[in-house]
Length: 130
Image 1 (cartoon, helix red, strand yellow):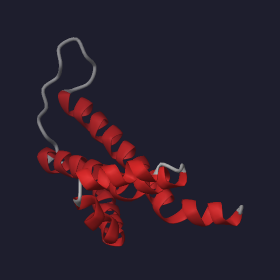
Image 2 (cartoon, one colour):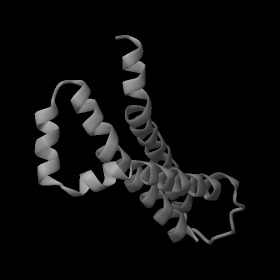
Image 3 (tube, one colour):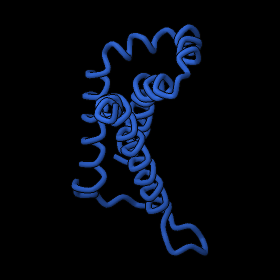
């Protein structure tokens, strides 16, 4: 069960990072006037064009994976797993792994929010101030 939880944490990190790469970073660079940098990055990594064209699906999948991960991390009853205690420490190896999984999950969530803001909200907000 812990392996499945760790897999979902890593998957949510990479899917949220992909939203940042495909959608947020290019939009931010264009807003800052660095369109040539975006052209260079896209020429080096052409799969970013496909991700950008399907950003709705990328964000939907990422939100879905993130929701499953939050459910498994916070709402699912934990099964008793035998864990080894680290000598000289108050917490077990499972406690340490769980804490790191939560840190990765929350970092992934904030990366996703940054990507969502830059992809869908930044340009409309900037247009209000024109």
